[in-house]
Every structure is written in C-alpha cells, then in structure tokens.
Length: 168
Image (cartoon, rainbow, N blue to C red; front, side, top):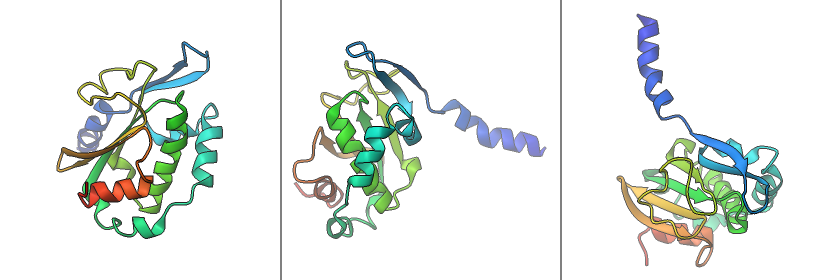
C-alpha cells in the first residue's frame, strides 16, 4: 500500500522531469545546452567558468529588492537563454543571484535553453514569441505580466520592481 502511494506521488514528477541535452554549437563546435534544464546544468564544467564568475561578482541592489521581497513569491518565472549567447552568460547568473537574495523558490523558475534558432529540445518555446535572449517572463495567476528581454532597461532589480509593482 505504501509503495502504491509513493508511486502515485512521484509518477507526475517523472512525467514532467527536465528534458535537456548537451550538444555542440553548429557555429563554434563548443558545448551547448538545449531544453528544459535544472539550474545546476549551468554549473557543469562546460559552463561554470562564466556562470559562477558572473554570479559571484554580482552585487544585487538590496534597496530596490526590498520593495518587492514580499510580493515576488506570488510569481512564476520562465527564463529562456542560450549558453552560446553573451547576453545570457552575463544576465542569467545575475538574475539567479537576485532570486537567491529574495529566497525565491527554485520550483517556480523554469529554465529553457535554446539553440541559435531560438528552439529548445522540444516545443518549450512555442507560443512564447522569443525573438531575443535572454528573456525573463513573469507570470502571476498563470498570466504573463511582464518581460525583461536581452538586457534590462535600467537594472534587473529596477525592471523587476516595475513588473512586480505593475509600473510602466
């Protein structure tokens, strides 16, 4: 009986498990991630030099983040990025540093890595209208409420604050 209950609890997790692969960039021959990845995939030896470096060097704007700290937990976030893209290599580690500062739950972040044609492993980007990366998409109550595309307009923190506080 206990085994059946455990299987019922974990079976949905198996159905929706991350689906990604490590491949080679057609332009450079360097390693490339595509698909829905866990954050830890960015800390693989192929990507750790830029992910960990940019993460460790970034200092979040705590004054701005304190304005959204209680509100951000009502959101879910999709990150669409390319491990080949210099903007993604700069902004995604910084974004994760901000999320860590806010104690944002990792389960509420979906990381989608794409190739140079903005395609993932399956149809992960279908309907997302991705033109540039990285793209950070914020959802509240399953509705998109804002995006940060390629680079922030001001800073990641201030752009997030505008999205969460619904400012133009």
